[in-house]
Structures are given as C-alpha cells and as structure tokens.
Length: 103
Image 1 (cartoon, rainbow, N blue to C red):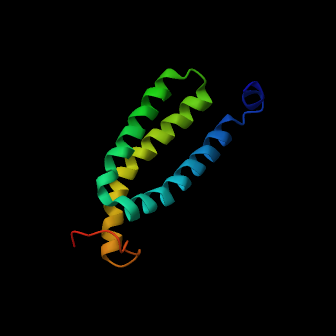
Image 2 (cartoon, rainbow, N blue to C red):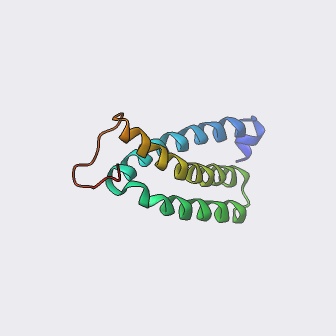
Image 3 (cartoon, rainbow, N blue to C red):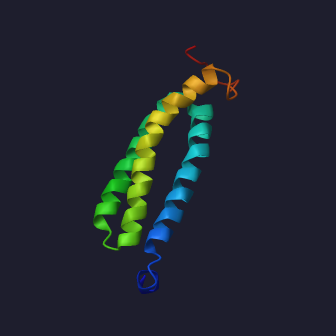
C-alpha cells in the first residue's frame, strides 16, 4: 500500500478496480436474468448490503473503496435486472426456453 501511496497510484488502482467490477456485473446480470428472471433481485440486494457492511468494517482505504464500488454495483444491478427484462421483451437478448415469461 505504501508503494501505491508514495507514487500516487492509489486512484488509478481504484479506477481500474471499478472498471473491472462494473464490467463483471454486466454479464452477471444477463446470466442471472436468463436463468432466474427478475425474481433474483434480492440476491443483488443482499450482496450490496454485505458489501456496504464490509466497506465500513475494512480500514484499508483501497479495499474499503473497492468494496463500496462492489456494493453499489450490486444495488445498481437490481435496476438493471428489470431493465434486462425489457431488453429481452424487445428481442435484444434471447429468452430462456425453459422459463415462462410474464409477457
């Protein structure tokens, strides 16, 4: 950590971590909707709450920041899971033939 702070690289590492976390959540939302539909929104809520709690408990700034980004990316995914349903309805993403859809 001292290396990152000494050479003022902490912001870049947080930015790179944020990019990675957000990039990972995109396919997770797509797959979660494909297999479970919007009924899995509560999983993202629990992940977000756990992320917030861990972010508060961790004293190291880098890990605390990345856990905060993880938490709010999980919260944002709740909205995105419902948006994904609209995208599937429009035909932009494939339907799972093993599931029933409300539309």
